[in-house]
Length: 264
Length: 363
Image (cartoon, rainbow over all chains, first blue to last red; front, side, top):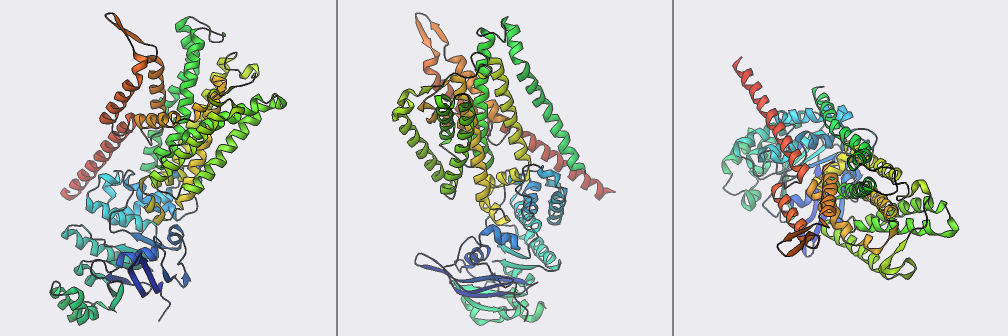
């Protein structure tokens, strides 16, 4: 097996007495869509925060492309190619849609500390931003303030910010949180399209089983801070422990379909 | 490139107003001279009085612009801005009046004052910018108040009374050559405005705005926000120091009140009233508010036998005005206008896009 793009080695995070992430091992292979599922409080978002650098682990190691990044600050990890979206909408509200995305394009360049030129004279950042905006379908509202967008639009904007950063590893934390059900299909399409664009790895934290079973190559199930099971969607769907511990009857129809080989 | 043309056209349109304001500032002494029939180059008279008023307004403008850089553009709330303003005044005064330095004391004072402001900004920033919002504000307040209390009891600098400057060279003396001093202050004011404007149009300025809007997001996108915040606080500190130096030269004296909360709260209110995070708002807020204050200070209204002194109730009047402005213009006077225009433009763009789509589906 090739070297994984991301590896967590016995990563642990404690908040006071609470063990949010309990010695988790995680290997994310390059070019995959790797979903992390599990009930609320399973430690999924905390694990994502450890990977993107918002928290430092109590113990354990995080490796990106074989390099340890455990102690790197947030912005350095972004420069290495880790992009992140958030469960709670996390944008720059009083800037235009274009500026929100343009900032992400600017962030990965090295012109940031330059007071002599105008930001808008870097037309390649604008072009990159417009491409990302177009990709998520926000072109008509590019000059609008981000705060004026409806909720679904803000989720799309998050995705555009992420795309403009051109990360090798994308972390999507509940991309469908609070999104209307008809837009979930759109999001599935977006993720599938992202994946099709060459050398990109995507970690998706999700509750929506329909989305997870449709887009994932590999699934890790977390429960109470630990990894409960890992495998392909078909394996996870057929896994009795997972079914009883988490999935239950609620998603049985989706699971049966997946277990029946609906997915490759 | 439809986009870039649109932007530069808007910039040109905006510049007309600014160029007009600049011309007005340049001819102001002569207009007032003509209106009051006094000479703008005389030692005293109404023309010279109004020059003095305008100099003070412009100094307030510089101080408020510097506050806005932190508060309005970077989203950092400082309650200790007066520290830079007052300390620069003291340092300038101290070196300027030192007899052993003679004429060079003025220049040394300016250089030392501004350097100390920069270093102080760096120190305070490094020590505290990791603190979130209100904790940073309280820390800066504490430092400024400590300096205020210290200087109001420190006898070598005249305790509560402060001290007066030594004799200034004639061409630089705000009393003897007020017109020259007026143009010096005007030039520094205009340069400060241009500097902040260029900064906010630059990639660095874009990052400052991103920090104001959502610092955590800015970090996840890949900006080392601490460095940018440090940069903002150092630059704002230097500019507040510039204002403090000019203020000291104008009054030819310093006192501990320059480090008092008034010189932090006033710029804060002026920024909010004019429009935090806009370029012209804080200037308009500063000049407008200070002008009102100066004009209303000596007004008396006779109601029957009793004479109401407006000056005494001025804080109440200004307080009421502040509440009114905040209610009517939630983003400040200029800020609310800018937002309104931005929203209208965005709605137009959206409508056009929808029409284009409708046309495409028809044809």
